[in-house]
Amino acid sequence: MQAVLVTNGRIRGNDTRTKVPYLLKGIVFGNDGRALSPWHTTKKNGRRYRYYIPQRDTKEHAGVSGLPRLPAAELESAVLDQLRAILRSPELVGEVLPQVIKLDPSLDEAKVTVAMTRLDAIWDRLFLAEQTRIVKLLVEKVIVSPDDLEVRLRANGIERLVLEMSPKSIEQEKEAMA
Image 1 (cartoon, rainbow, N blue to C red):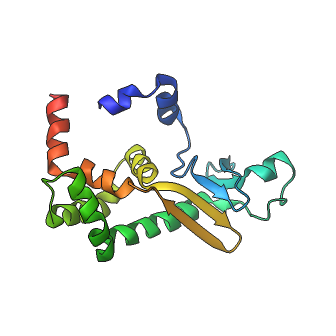
Image 2 (cartoon, rainbow, N blue to C red):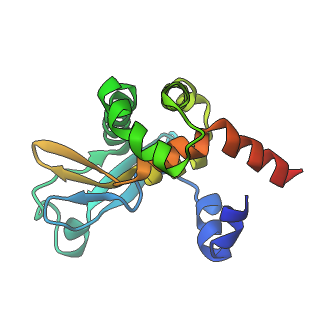
């Protein structure tokens, strides 16, 4: 809770005031290095279509970037599928375990494995704000090209996530709220 309050109120408020949610806002880029911006349109029947569009297309003219409008749901699900596959991979537990234990010696392999699989199991029940926070904790950048999607993870994102999900940190958070 304290971490939330530390951030600037105006910036924090932007997330709560947003009318149209975008999971990858601020971390998705084209292969030219320019950002892809969230964009939406609402049809007469009330149906809303969400996209990520290249900044270059909005600044110069449509199609100049070589990337189409990317449907937000498809791009977000592709990134989430990759993240879930990474979190489920047993090889990753072996790589992450020594680093996490170095940060918190009270953790062991079982606790780390449970934390990583528990996140995958409860993902669909999390609020969008929490999903966005976790994605931004894990993902440094998503790079989209006409025929490829690259997800770059943060160097210590998984370790930080496991530490947050450990039983000890959950108990500390409950005590702080009381």
